[in-house]
Length: 275
Image (cartoon, rainbow, N blue to C red; front, side):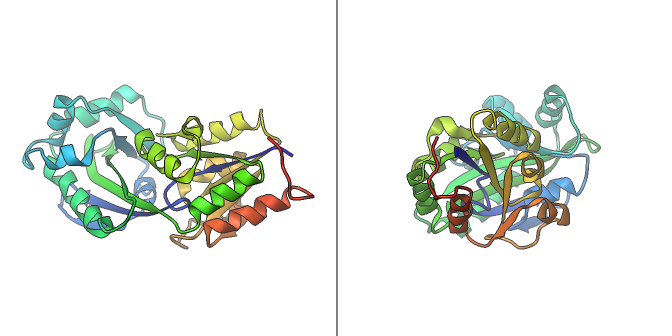
């Protein structure tokens, strides 16, 4: 039997720490679930910025974030949204915003770095939550993560069984490739800036080549992929607070990424699969 396992990154392969800042109030929201924060309002759209943290930290804190993004020609990708919106409209909101400052994003970066700076491998990503109703940036966000203990061994075990591994995540491709290199997942099997619909499409496309496609995720943005996959695995390694509809869609619920291996092994009568 040919099998492919698709992993989300944060919460499944990575222990992620996320910080958001409310642009209107200046309130810092530490260790927040950004996808849940986004989904609480159908007008919100979570985007990932193709910006490097060091460059952002070197910019004037009182500069409009939109001006900084335009000056540096920083692009973006959509990570999570509830209503389909043209990319051009999102670009107009992002680059035309006159509320969020560079300092709002710097505050998120500082908080995340303060938590994770002692880790051996740290990957960071920054973005924003746009609000279609408010017509601008409602939150700035930064996420940082380190691989869960056992993540690398899990990938090695799957590869030893002949199982193909993929990453499909809303994070930037550059960040995901760094993770993939560490874990041993081929870069051409890494899909960044994947919205919920794109994740589901990736699963569907892989079903043309593999007899069984397994989706491993941890958040509401994995729901569509769960419903499309042959086998869905919900990870509670980082948090047990999951929406009911997500837990209902999961075929398995795990507490540790290592548990993926025996689940996949059971899919084959003799424990040996072929690509």
